Image 1: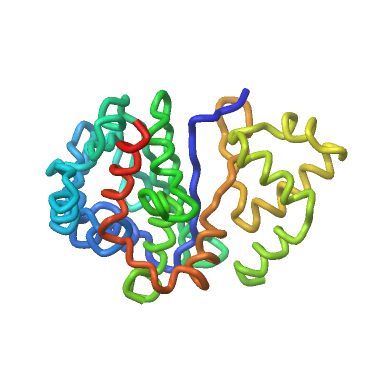
Image 2 (image 1 turned 135 degrees about the vertical axis):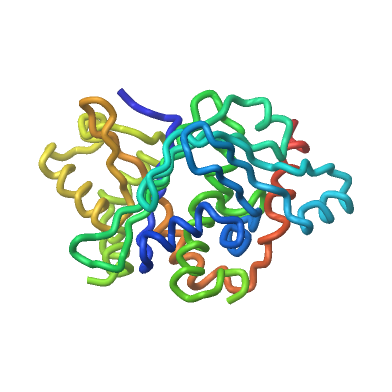
Length: 171
Length: 106
């Protein structure tokens, strides 16, 4: 058996699991790294999730003639076990192609290392069944020409923010 | 050993780079599948995969009774960001650029 639709990303971050959990689930944090879109979670099974377009995205969209929706990603919380496990559905609404694809499943697992307390292993598993355009987007473009670096870039930026206090773009 | 040392050591071996190539082409493969592509014993392939896993370049995920191997690009991204990404400021516009490129393709 092979699984060609799932993508797995892993990064080690020197930070407490609670801090990493906050950086993933609180808008004050999510606006500081990656695509900088504030994320809103209702952290219980069946709870709503959404990420909002930033003012910069809207402005860029206006200038270039691409209407940007207010909510750029939506989904539903399936499982929330802070600060360790978050399972949710995830659908990118920025583009009509990805918006028409089925909801994908996203899992964040935060595990503090027994051998190195204070360091967490963060694993992002994105199950992208029947969602090829979304899969292309989250895999990132190696040259950052289209859509930036996807999950690898987001996690690299998250690591930078939590370990140095500033995201890569501000360094 | 520091994280970067593990990554560079793992990447220094041609067989291990080839295993990453295989996973880049198609992810989520079992040891048996990977073994069939390499002129090497199961034990040898499994040892190489262990080195890749310890460097964070491969992540193993259990699905049912199988262990599937995935390429994790984050350690390579970290190396990229350390030396190459200094002046990039695509933060804000990245998603919009993507939208445009998707629309141009369609």
